[in-house]
Length: 355
Ligand SMILES: *Cc1c(COP(=O)(O)O)cnc(C)c1O
Image (cartoon, rainbow, N blue to C red):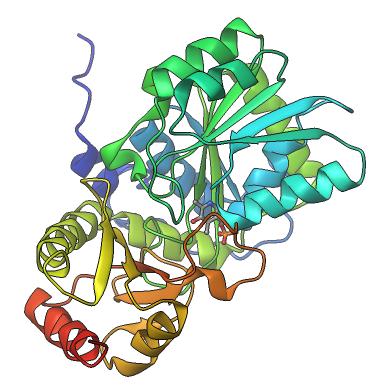
């Protein structure tokens, strides 16, 4: 009898555990090994590690494909871009994650590829741009504009053009969106964010259902060596075990804060895609007011990155590399799992001072 597929919360808790037998550890230990006794399948620490494997089984199970872990999200992104042949075209949202845009610009400046950046909310324009592409990159919601892509429509057009389709699923997490079920070829994660979830580890991942692509990507990882540390893999798996609870709580908090922020006179615009824990606000009085806000709170910590248990925020345009089409006074907020009333009191006090 075929086994019933498990639901996400059960996969998050159980996937990648060692076989339950007397005296086996319940969870996978940290295996510190640069080499293995000859004659097996792994041989060397760059080719594999049991702690990575446990993490890969868990994230692969959640996304519904085979997972390879990487040293960081951008190491995973670079490995996907490396699939693109010399001189070929990559189409990507103009508001993709800043590091992704910088990688594309770097590849283009060295004559490796042509990058075509398009407004992902304009599905017709995006589809038209896919015509002669060899890779179509999607991110939905985008960071930090929080735009949503029409993945099925763009996926179909990209495949029609013979391009691979990759989705950066960092913001949505596999709990809200499983792109492989929409027939995309590759899912990419910065596991640094919601998956690890505690602002203490950098890690990335690629997930695919295509065995041939998996083999190519595994070879790239073996050769280039952008592999995760064992401790990082352990921390990311430890984080993943509670991701569904953390994301659920962050979303409840985010929705409540959105409701309150929309009423506040210091704020011109609140952007929220309707799910998840990331909110963007645009301050009515400009960039200086936004900078002031990030210095006036005590619970909300001013820092980059997102997806941790802690509430953090930053004005994105403080980075010179951020797209100029992102409003100067936009503050991206990563809502944590603290008590929402404490979060609001802290924010409101700082916001009240701005009006
Ligand atoms: C942070 C982030 C990345 C990069 O991941 P790192 O782990 O920082 O290398 C890629 N995509 C998105 C959407 C991100 O938020």
